[in-house]
Amino acid sequence: MARSHDDSWDLASSVGVTATMVAAGRAMATKDPRGLINDPFAEPLVRAVGVDFFIKMMDGDLDMAAIQDVSPTRAQAMVDGIAVRTKYFDEYFISATNGGIRQAVILASGLDARAYRLPWPAGTVVYELDQPRVTEFKTTTLAGLGAEPTAARRVIPIDLRGDWPAALRAAGLDTSAPTAWLAEGLLIYLPPEAQDRLFDNIAALSVPGSTIATEFVPGIVDFDADRIREQSAAFREHGIDIDMASLVYPGQRNHVVDYLNAKGWRAEGVTRTELFERAGLPVPDPEEDDPLGEIIFISAVLSA
Ligand SMILES: C[S@@+](CC[C@H](N)C(=O)[O-])C[C@H]1O[C@@H](n2cnc3c(N)ncnc32)[C@H](O)[C@@H]1O
Image (cartoon, rainbow, N blue to C red; front, side, top):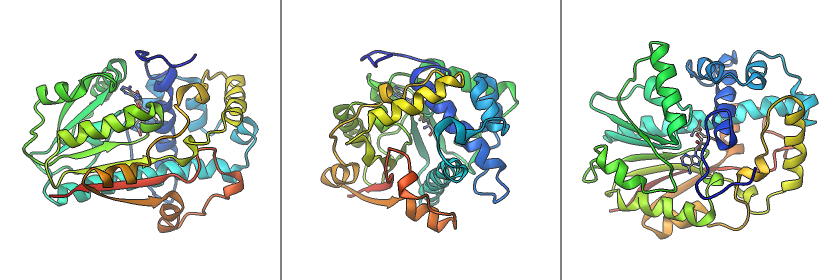
């Protein structure tokens, strides 16, 4: 179904499925004997969502190669891609708090369990924002598992196209202190102007020394919708109703590094290839790589 300005979802529908999909990737990367990441909450969360496709995927009961017409190497690269992304953003938060920041905001938190698994220094507050059915599900499920947050966790059930800055202030964000912001796996689901507005809102709530981490997906600019639709059709044959082509907003948009640098941040990007190399992982063959292209992972500091 096409997107609309006020659409909503849970973790088994529309954009919400993508949160379950990446959490399934984290569950698989966590099981990987190479010990790339450790997210012990990903697997139980995905099982609780209950989408059969992802449960089979985590259990190794899906022939990914048959589904997407990609090699087993490519299937592994997809999981490795989630692993390096998770590690990059984990390290980002650890570095921000080592630098003295004591409040973090996770925009589009999905099934991100960092508020429960990172070693936050005492006194850190972690805000999580996502659609109401997403935040409610994660909070209830993790409580049911007996999981305890490792920071003060404040949840803001809201659509990020609405007035989330007001909600964040009302929830207690201290705009006189620096904040570490994260927008992971979010931007392609926002229209280009909403991406710019997101960063403008972040800047308006940030004092110098605040940080942002996010990623830029170059493939969104000349997005190959037909190729994505073919893949989505193959997914549907296996019982999962996802049409990635209709969930994202393709076309021209500002490059995040340029936009942030123009607005007073000092932004640096690192390619996914570089992250694979740093982790000692085999770099995916560009010919076989996914249509989203060479993703750039970005972190930025707001200058004085
Ligand atoms: C690919 S998932 C990423 C989730 C999480 N950041 C992670 O990496 O595991 C995309 C997330 O963006 C959220 N999202 C997308 N558009 C949103 C919007 N307009 N308002 C609130 N949440 C949104 C979805 O609900 C979903 O949780």
